[in-house]
Amino acid sequence: MREDQTSPTVEAIGTEVLLTETFDRNSITVLRHAVASRAAGAGLAGDRLDDFVVAVNELLTNAVRHGGGLGRVALWRADGSVVCEVSDSGHGLPGPVPIRPAKPPSDQPGGWGLWLAEELTDSFQMSTGMGGTTVRVASRIFLREP
Image 1 (cartoon, rainbow, N blue to C red):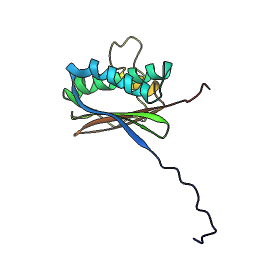
Image 2 (tube, rainbow, N blue to C red):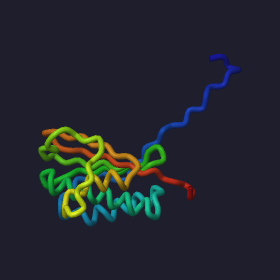
Image 3 (spheres, one colour):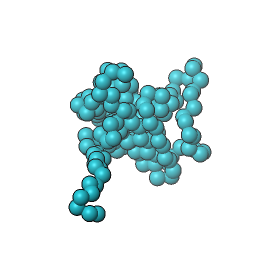
Image 4 (tube, rainbow, N blue to C red):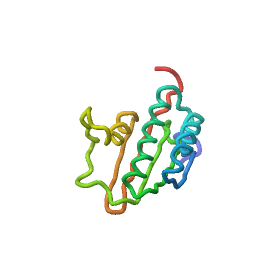
């Protein structure tokens, strides 16, 4: 590049790790409060924060109930969103991974976790297999009211 030419401005994509931890059933409540606090500190607020925390709590609970009793959670801020990934080491979900979790029948007392997590966040990704299940959700941070 010649000296008189200017290079395009490249903005770095930043990732700020907010939390990474292994958990079991005894630590879900404390972990839910930590997720709420750190997601709020990263910029989520109001209903978006509440929805994100409910979604993550469902994923934490699923990991313990259906994924072998232990899980791993990671929370970070990237590209204007707060992202959370919850993994377990269970046997995975039976059958193929759905593109979107199916809404359970309204009279079903359980089985709402994945559907709620997908409904309450802006992004939902899931992978599952014999080595466990990983679900990643993200909610965008709005810096001003729409």
